[in-house]
Image 1: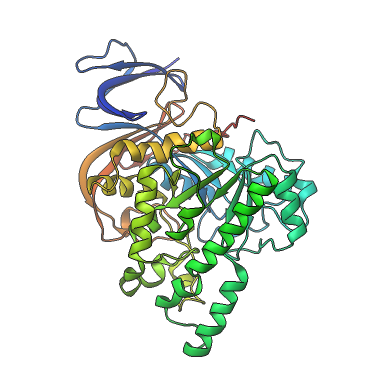
Image 2: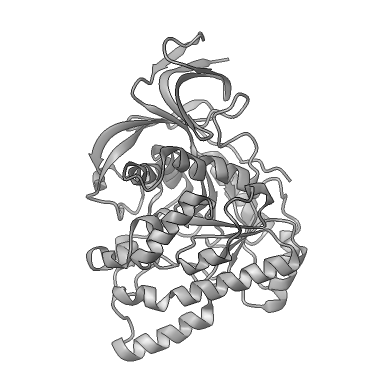
Length: 447
């Protein structure tokens, strides 16, 4: 069994930063040594990590890797490679593909494809529809993180708007229910108002007025009411407004006791509506990037623990698909290659502590979804690890691994970057080079 030693790192784990070393045996963290100086371990490979930070790999609970059906702009192999290069060692992919992941057959196809091609660990959300509850009952709950419901239209055709179907899913499913929450009738009303004033495809600056804070709050509030009344575990994806924070449970409550949990995405923490003039459709997501006041409230909510985890909603499109105004341009963008570095940059600005970044990107996703033996640097856990270095660099198109070939971060100078990424004990990414032999594994969930 191969033994790898990572020596002299600054380890950030479970709320602490300390000098130390880690021994990897095969795919498992075998031992952790705290303290400076030589590690008391022997091994075939010894990595001197002096001056580097060692953290558990990030777990991204919301990505759209576009396979099957949209592989002209992304696929599991390529987007997972970008994830690994960015320090994300595990991902959960969303169901709005072609065909949509709403059947056992479609779900199994994704698992097989990821096992063949993904360098990162993986799982997949099946999507709930108005008429597939019976199919959802056939899916193995130990292999999936939960169910995904689109309560507002987004990329794909998975809007669930039948009240009886919603009541049944919330009342009879034993799985976590993750929701895209935007109120459809509010959005349609706003579209009518703005197209009457500004034509069939209003300017991008009107996107957050059409996909409005009211639309987000109204839909999130309905989902919370359903969950509380019917006893479901609810996870609100990509929280984007200050007002939605009023719906969340007390930050002092233990995560595993929470019935209502939430996620915020990097673009909502980074950008505001002031950036549409500069970046246009490159920051068009659903839900929309909103005001600076919303952004500040989201940052405070994540720092305090009111918001539980940080993710990306990585959703690549070709730039040609992003052309047009706020109705014609596609919604979504690529983020996963710079999510850890981007959050680290916010820590440099003292918006979050480094320990908090590790908590919301690694520890808490593992706890929230009850993932077995990942998300921490602990003996007996899988060796999903990331070495970060202080090496200021500019994000440029020639270094991107996304098939779509662009990033809203292009031109941005970041203080930290990923030196190495370990997936199940193997070096999957090493200072600019990917190891094509590494394959991730299915995530396992406690039920």
